[in-house]
Amino acid sequence: MNRIRLRTKIEVVIVLNFLIMVAIVSVTSLTRTITDSGDTIETMIRNTKGNIWDPTSGNLQAAINDIGSQGGTIWIGSSITLSSEIKIENSINNIVIDFQGNFVTLSSSTTSFINLTNASHVTVRNLIIKPHEDSTVSIIKLYIGSSGGSTSYNTFSNIHYKNQGSYDLSQWGLRKWSQHNFTLIEMKLNGPGEINENTFIRITAEGPDRGMYFNQPVNAGWINGTYVDSVYLDQYRECIRFNHYTGNRSFNYNRFCNIKTQTCVFTEYGIIDISGFGNHFDHILMWDWYACGPAYSNTGIREYSITSDADSTYMQLHAYSELASGGVTNNGKNTMVISLGKIKIGG
Image (cartoon, rainbow, N blue to C red; front, side):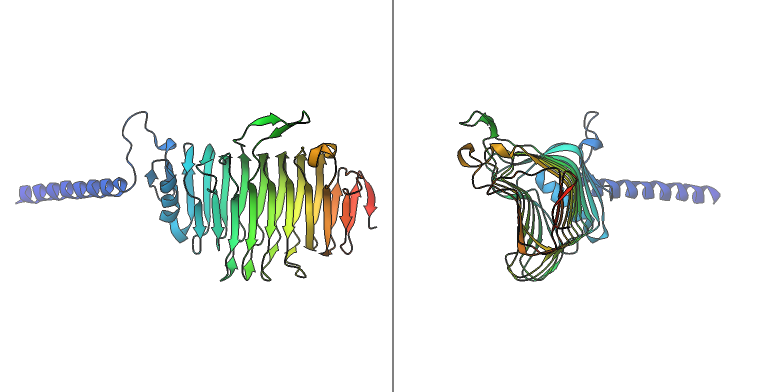
């Protein structure tokens, strides 16, 4: 009798182990299995749920959706090409996406990198973005739609935008990027809601059209408390533009630190149409304004401008030119501009 019991126990254990193995294979087969010694998990897309995928555009979105509202981390172990933008929206929050220094190539001129809509506490870090050479879109988008919501407390760090156009000589013998039509970062209010307390740190780019765009085409919403630090643009048309709904102070207490830029023959504006209350610009350096403007002429240039809908703007500039159409145009209230340690406007 004892022998029967022992044999029965052994058989039960074997069956249970078999069922466990089948269950494991079933789970991994939904994503990816490792096939040989050169096929390691570190080269795949993986997340904190333990699932792995081949490094493709659709699989990256699948890894994000797999985490869902519970939050977690996604690691991308290889360079990847995106045929459509990454979307993080509505209930998907508390996610970290770490590209571990890999390239992200955008496959077409209309392909963006990422769109956050009503998403918060998302971190994206450690990547080199290669926009299509004919790109005309915003690469990173933070958005509020007509139904409203909040896209806040997100962080983007250690990101480099690598221009895919050629680096040519202009007709005046100055070097320039032949393709420069994309925007790095756009925050857009298209309805009631807030895009608040987002952070952008250690961002570099080659030849964008625009570095950052605060965009409010409707009379609703707020973009407050943005923190930008350690940004370098190697040529650009505009560094930062504020497009506010007239009469609405919707961009408040945003802070920009250590912004460094190289102007060029197609540069037109530095920081343009500042609006809102208490926006702070600290250690801003934009050099070679002499090389800017149509036909290398210094004409039509506006380095810094402050609108009548601005109050208590603070700017600490390393320098600015005294061009008749450049320098600082101040139509705001309680503005203070300090350059090279001296108060130029305010007191």
